[in-house]
Length: 466
Image (tube, rainbow, N blue to C red; front, side):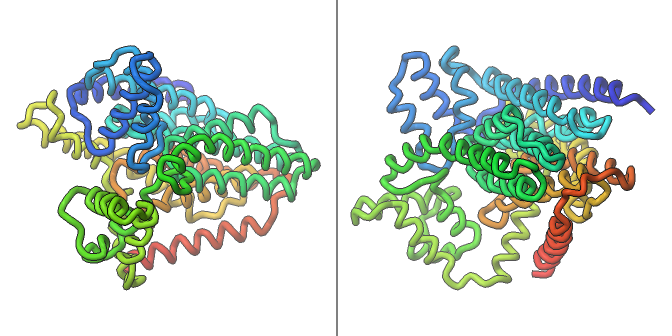
């Protein structure tokens, strides 16, 4: 068997080849869906950075409809500051390069986990899943948000192990963790759930394990406060723009109605024809202009009207479809790009998509199964395994809330991909059997693991039987 370092080198070489091939294929691919919004924001911000445009215009463009966090646009803005008319190749190459740099940062963090081949595993999933590179070269927040979340989780693991050893959190590790969480939050609003979950786990360990409970808890609370303060400028700007309180984004009422409501009631009757939630949004804007009522208040009223009469069975049936779209179509984003992938001849696109789909599933499936196992098994072999298990479960819960709140799609699995690799590492550590423990691990957290696994099974059964 190859040594861990050799495996990592081979995997790294394959990742570079895969990235170059993906960029070659996608270099003349037009933008799709949400990419247009992020690109428009990046252009406006780039112009402001270069002194060619107004900062007020840039902020207005970044806020837009209020549906998106500004992180992806911020990532791309420096390119447009330097090259105002950057084309598809430059844009996609820029995003791919930034995401690969984040992958390198994640690799550096994962090397601190107690598995010798952690680098090779993370390089394999996500970076050898063929479809991942197409997502990484897209102007979307999901790949960087997933990598930053993984970095924050590994840093949380290191802080947690220190707490179990009776040590107060390292200021450096804590600052890096909070920075990764803030960056992830500015990319995707739902990361706020992960922020809460990570701090909850660490605060529990601080109360039951650390010798300096007050100092440890105080530092963690200070870190959580720093995240809130870092989010505050965006929240204030968005709230002023919409004249209503906004924490991250504004689209929750409309996407919940669109995902689980009755389309015949959403606009207090059927909405006009259109794409996604745009007709409902336009209806709310028109009604606000006519009545003087705040548009966000109207959207909440529309949600209530649309969800009136929703049954548990109907909700679970819709959620089941969303979960399937979220997890079981890893090459779906590539499929969405094919009609505008002008570099690929039309008569070859179907064969190309089939190849990407097959190559993606070969690696994706075993890692997806590992994530499933990581959520079902109760790790007790060591404090390290226990903490990893709790963090993986907490992060999976946070990241899988989306299909239960609004429509999902195949572009979102990349958020979970680093957790899949981490789950393989956890399973490998669990196979090593009983190891030393500190004696500080709270036993009720093991019961919480069991309760989580039982709830996981019950929810899966409910979705299948609905």
